[in-house]
Length: 452
Image 1 (cartoon, helix red, strand yellow):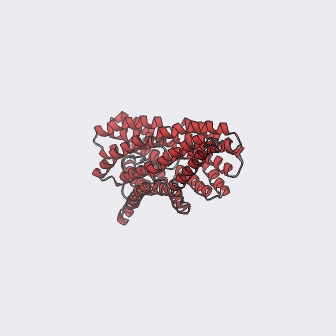
Image 2 (cartoon, rainbow, N blue to C red; image 1 turned 90 degrees about the horizontal axis):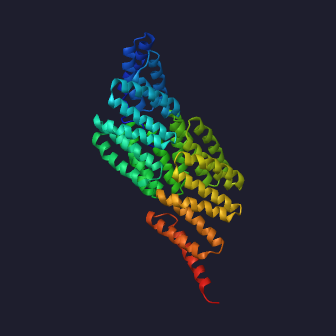
């Protein structure tokens, strides 16, 4: 969800579109005539415009043509961006490393910073959050040194996204709120939209879907105005996720399908895998387990193809959920146990807690109460550590129900007291129902204390 680059171009007016088409033809003729200076100059200008309107395939073709005339820092950079955006991170990293070396040789601190930022973004997409942070923290002082305020804002947003991915909501929000005034000050509308979307993600992760939607709709209006198609797809996905959280699955599906069409249009393979997974989730919650499985099985090979380890773990976890819903707990456990080490490998603490909870659910269904409790108890401190109230509520609910089934009403009541307090804090949609359950458990518990 983070912005991969410090700046983006605005969409073109019709007259400008005609001019760019002419420039593209000049570039083609320059390459054919081995006129390297003209090809590089024109290629850079055209690619920067096309990147701003998500014409990634065209950028890759033009940059590759330019590189037939010899190494060129801008062509490597632009092709890396296009390849990263279309789900080929390892090829993107090769291009970025070439660009980085050329910038460093030339002493171009601004170019070095922008490339470090993009390398960080690519590692984040691969699930290697530590390498992502390392590169962002190298980029940030360079951007400040050269006075690139838009770049500073974009990189602060990217750092926030890494912390958000780890479930560290406070650090994420701290970076976003540093970024947003900078982006507004310099008029970086596309960057502002990314930051607004990411702030929405934090609120969504904390269970406050209405506040999340407010931020997403602000972002979407900006992205449509500036023609950021890839960003629009990301935000549509996030809106879908918020409606999912509000249990409005039909509206969620509508937004996911809008996002999927755009991602296929711009060639965003990693985004496509994530959206296919989200569509599967909506069908799963609608009770259509087979349709959910179909979408998860479409997502899994795409995530593997693009090297998206975090996305692979999500798909595996959700395949497990679908099998669990179909009553095949052994197949569910097999997929959960494939997902868990990947989530630990990429540092996905929220995902780790979710998968531990899912393993607990499957063990409970298989009649292994103690194994289920063990997994829930491993998940609970992770949810608390990362501030994931929705996950904590779900896990405490499962623990409470296990205790209730085992006759330990004291523990069941204690867990529901925590649940209701958390739900009050985030205005959770289950608050009324869970308050009723708490009162019922209290009456049951009180009845057991009465003398016979």
